[in-house]
Image (cartoon, rainbow, N blue to C red; front, side, top):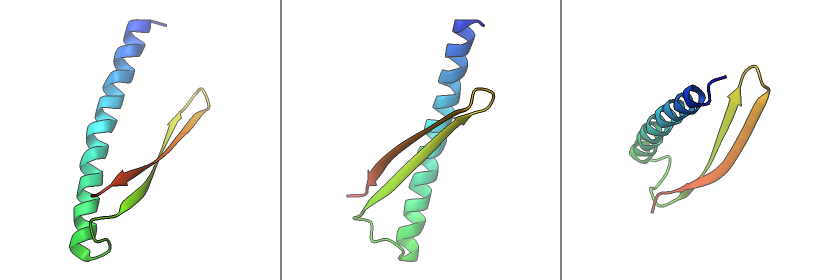
Length: 68
């Protein structure tokens, strides 16, 4: 195993996840406000589950997204 390749690959994956996740959350919140499903001043529960095949990794992070 090449540690440099592993590190670079992980960083690339996490950068993609971070940027894409932010866009999707922003889009969903805007649409929720537009539909009237949320007011836009809530704190929304958030959860992400990371899995990695071949090594049986399943890691969950619970948090929240504040809108105001």
